Length: 239
Length: 211
Image (cartoon, rainbow over all chains, first blue to last red):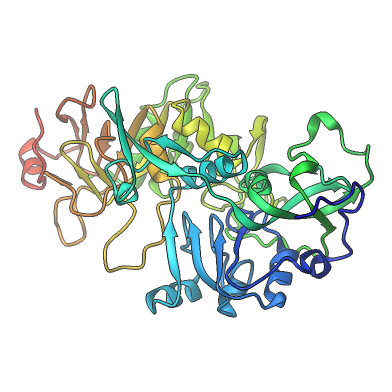
C-alpha cells in the first residue's frame, strides 16, 4: 500500500483503521496464543466489516463467543491455519460438517514460517515433522543422516496484532506472554494494523526496548474496553 | 503395585539435572515441576514465550498476560524472561532445551512417538509437540502402560499418526521404566514398579526390548 506519512498512522478506532483494507477471500494473520494477546478490537471490526471467505492464520481459533470464535459464529472464515484448535465447539462443528478447511502446522513451524515470510525468506528446512503427515507432499533433504522438511514462508494481506504500548510512529512494546505470535505477524502483513492498551507520543518509549519497530506497522489504534479473558484460571492457596 | 500419576512424575523428575532448561508437557508431565529436588537449579520453559516459570498465582493476583502453554495463569520469577514464539521455538528446535517430558498415546520399539491424533476423532492439533520431539536433546515419555481396554501402548510400530520418528529416549509407565543409551539402540528394561515382574511387563507389552 501507499506508505503512510509519519504521524499519519493513528486512527480513531478499530473500524476506521480497517476501512478500505478488508475484502472477501483475503488472508488475515491474527496475533495471540489462546486468548492471550489477541487483538480484541480489530477482530470485532473485522467481523463488522462483513468480509467473508477469509483464510485466517492464527495459532488458535479463539473460544465460542470470543476472539476468533466471533468470526466462526458468523461463518466468515473459510480456512484456518493453526497449531491447536481444541477450545472451540463451533469450530469442531463446522470442521466436521466440512464447512471449514483446516491446515495444521506444528507451532514452531508456524512461527518460523511467519517470521520467514516477513523477512523475505522463501523457505527453510526443519527437522520438525519429518516422518509424519506434516512432511507429506513436501520437499525433503537428508543432511548427515537426518531428514529435513522444506517449509515455506507465510505472508498475509492483512495482519492484526495487539501490543501493550505503542507510539504514534507504530513502535510497539508487548507485555509478558502476550507477545507470542504478534511480533512475527506484524512483519508478515502486507498491511499491519496494531491495537495497543496505551498509545503514547514519540519519545515516551525507550528506543532500546522496542519489540516491533514502527516500519512494520502501517496503522495503529488505542484499543477500548479490553476484556483480556483468562482461559484457565489457576491459583494457589496462601500459606 | 503399579505406580500412580504422582509416582510417574516423581520418577520423571529424577531425570532432571542441575542447570537444565526443561519443557514439561500438559498432564502428568506438568506435575514433574512439583518434584524438582530442593537445591537443584532447573529452569522451566513454556513454549508460548517464557523462561523461568513460577508457581500458580495467589487468588486475586492472576494476570491475563501471564500464562503457560496450557493457558493456565502462572507467575514470573526474578530470573524470568519473555520472548516471541519464533525465539521460543528457536530454543526448542535449536537444541538449547536439555529435556522434555511428554505424554503419549503410543510409543514404538524404534522410538517413534504418537501423541497428537486419533483418526476419526476430532483432531485438536499438535501444538508444539512435533517441534519439541524434533529439537529437544532428551525426550522422556510418561504414559499408562496399557490403554483402558488393556491393549499395549508400547508396540512394535505405532499405528496412530506419528508426532516424531525415532525421538523417544526414555519411557516411564505405571509398570516399568525403559531406556536406551542412544537413538540407534533398542530399549532396555531399567526398573519395575513395586511387585511387578519382568514377565508381567513382557506379557503386557507389544514392543521388543532388552533386559
